Length: 388
Image (cartoon, rainbow, N blue to C red; front, side, top):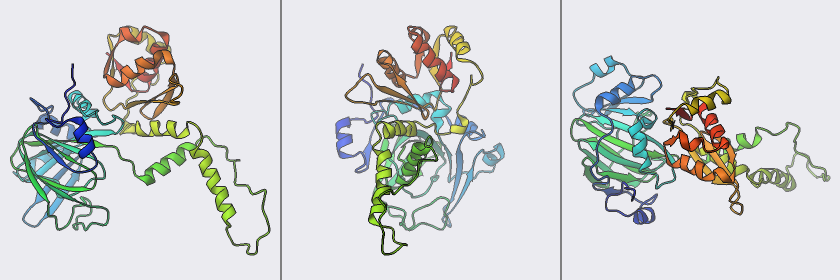
């Protein structure tokens, strides 16, 4: 069975070579026979929940002023809304809605460890979030109603903004291109390209598939924390070859070389960056909300519970990846789950790859070996899977 890609008549090779991180593209009928996965009432219900990240944005077109309220929202917030020019945004809908997770899997032609989440926006006529740019790629899939997009131009942190600092809207916006999207149509926007969407109808819903793109500052900070976490405090700067110098206050090139050697030692340490990167890119989006259904249960108790179930289902929001830690030795495989890492024996590699490609695994498949059972019991314990 050939997997359907959400690229319409555009081939994957053409998209990756000509558009990905290069230039925007409008894809008509991106998903054949597309059906929305969530309605307005369900979306509003999610926005009422404390653990769900949501925003309500009201545009006052007459004086170009904007208002934004962060969730959790209340029923009174919705009761007081104007008849038009407002937008509800709900982040990480794939964490709460199973059909959203299935939709995201259609986009795994981009490595799944790069995919961040599915944001759903619902707008009345005239609603939008204003002209802006993102530092990551985004697919904008029209689900219901119609939305007009203006897009084009490259922007950065130095680009002029409006006075509303919270929304970070681009000032003096003039889009280079204009397009209207109908249900099933999609617009791809690379990083830093300006875009502005305005609902042309009520009941206008857009799905935004965003990607993880850690900044260099985040990367350096996270790696240094990871590399340093198990280091002894007694590992110190040393200079046994110290020579007399004319000026005591001078930091010599030799001292700088010494520090560079220290840093290179950890960058070049076999397996360290590989393990860190896998953990980093699979961190749960909301670590404090990560479910731990069986945290107090022993592994043996969980193994018994698994044997009484039918399937093990990946909990929405769980992030998986794998890596061959040594390309010359295919028996060395690292498995990453929500920021954690474990080594997998050669005998169980195909099973782990199966986990990364499916949201559900049959208990009968798990019970084939003791290693699989223990692995899945640990994944249940940390809240990555649940017994069904």
